[in-house]
Image (cartoon, rainbow, N blue to C red; front, side, top):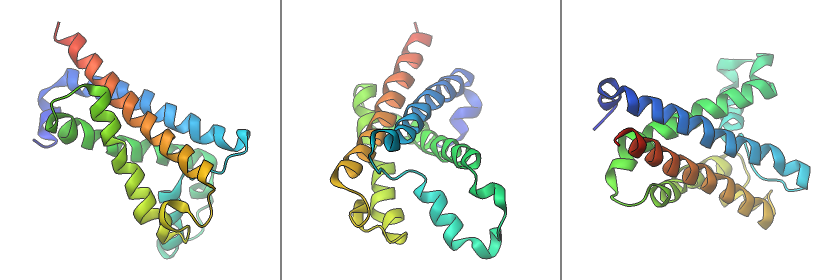
Length: 162
């Protein structure tokens, strides 16, 4: 089951877009809120990594370093995660949407904590530069992304089938 299922199921795409927008927005708002409550939680690690190692390609294009581009990039990478969830993960497990979403949230969290942050020099899960509170906050922000995505996608899909 790949991306072909999206072409054949308009409502599925609509539900995925709605669920993704809300789930990514929750995650984005939580990550934006962290500094306001004096927690340093990692956000934008993948973009930082791409800009760090992609400098020969990107040069010094100022727009790539703006907050606006950071948010756009976050929504785009979030949508990639949603495609993985909708096309594969949500169909793999037969359980409640919020449980599937909660389990799925481990994927982006682990990618970031085990690959991205160490490549940025932050250590495993960011332990060199983040406090325990920051690491937990980042986990919770990712978990809520998955929970909202899984629950809302299942709810919308079930409502459409009634």
